Length: 114
Image (cartoon, rainbow, N blue to C red; front, side, top):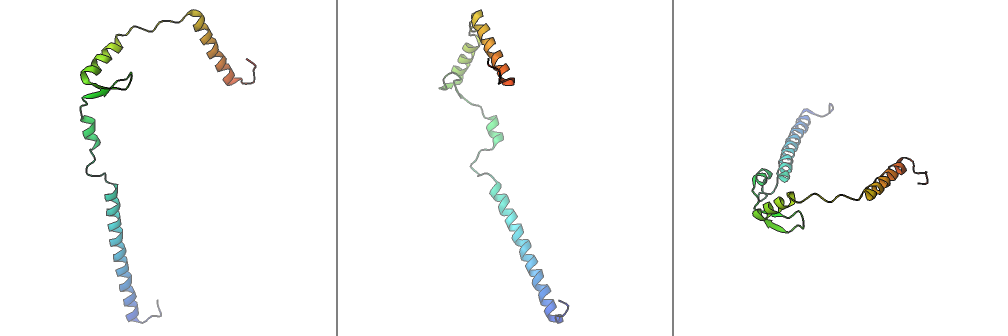
């Protein structure tokens, strides 16, 4: 650029300044467009609003049917007052324990024929 006449140097410098200005404008517009694309659609309900929403219907934990709030409360009370499950026979408990022990041993020593 040192061998160019003074008029040509000014034209090149002016062109570089214009090119830089156009680049800055383009970069700013693309950054604004990217942030606009990242926003959720306006009809989408914010999560903060959904967290405070009171549900008047529920699903049964037993069969997944739709229940009202009163039916859900009755079902929860019924499930909590249910008697404890029956205890297993002592022989069955011993067999289950031995099977679990065998499985644990085979995990660490798979080459043993047990």
